[in-house]
Length: 118
Image (cartoon, rainbow, N blue to C red; front, top):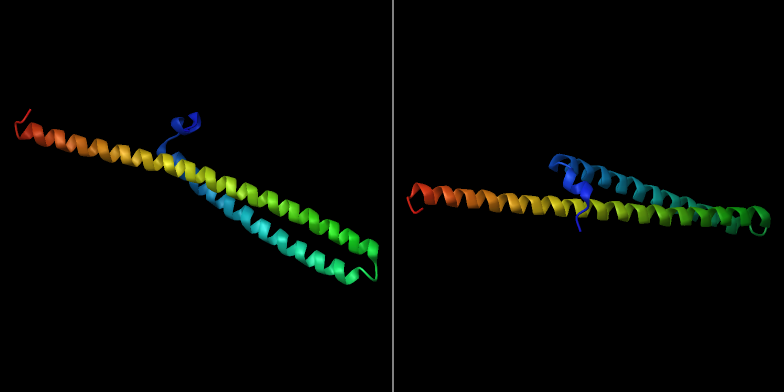
């Protein structure tokens, strides 16, 4: 389904939006990866501290879980951005196909006129 904002935007605006969405998706995916790495580190520290300072170990574990939750949300947003970019790219592809068909039809018509067939 084509949304109204895509119909109102120029080809160049949509191409720019694709670039922005892909950059945002990449940024979010990298952020999610970083959050997972920090979560893993906190989990390891929590396990190491469990026998020495159980309260601190539990705090680290809870922080690790919050980071994992944040990472999941960031990955969801990254995928949403990629899907939105793909939807816009699909619209641009349709535009290109229609434009090519119109160009071909015009050439065929002009050729027929020149040949005196019409």
